[in-house]
Length: 345
Image (cartoon, rainbow, N blue to C red):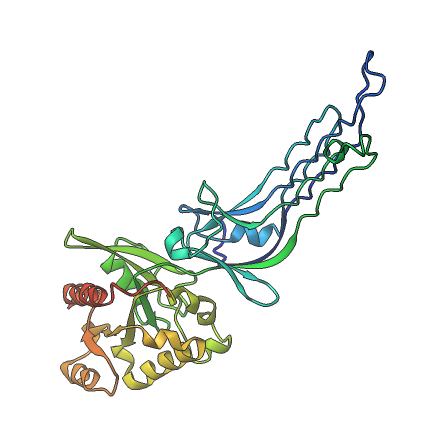
């Protein structure tokens, strides 16, 4: 099984246009035949297509260069050269394409043209990033009444080359945020049918996990669990910085505070600080503060958590005993309903 890769740098090249031909008719009874050199073929384009069953950029992490084919040269008898084959690059839904050097956003492939805002979509729904070079005209094109025998043709225009960065930004309705071992993966497993790997050691979650919560057979909610954040994650410590981008698109956050560890306000402040340093946009998202592992504490700790100076709606839950899980589902759907008019960030 290939590893999960959510970022890859690649080089893409569109094809060169083919050269036009210089040719003259050579027929037995036409001693002074006119020019018949055909045009060159167009170079292939570089296209990106969303594949819904693709989850990782591993293939692009391995293969660094993608090239479309060059157009063929024109030939005699006004025959146009063949067009170069396009290079079609498959990517997971939610991939963004950045210019490597400037990090300028070039395309946002959500898999939905309206949401992506990409105007340059082909009829097949693929996005054209680079257009191939145009084929050059053959000498037949340049024939006029005053220049009946042009002995020149046109070179094709070159294709383009671009170094780009591909990044996956998971598309989900709800994002689970918490410190390592705060119970995010376990909560995902009880809210949805997902079966993430769960263990009692730091960074159980090494890749984003997605699950679908079926709410009373009326609504489906996609929930993403990302690796735990630690203090300094936004500056590269631990694993969190690589995956903070996966909660950028979510509409609602569930922030887990582990009740068995105490220091509730400190836990929340670490999480909030890392989100703020990564992107203040994350702090604008509505959230539910869930005190996890309620089954291992007493009522005194519950009161301390609910009375802690943590902004936002708080609820105590236990994934093991399923305490308040149904109430949490109700609150998630209610909060999503209040923010249904907000588009993906």
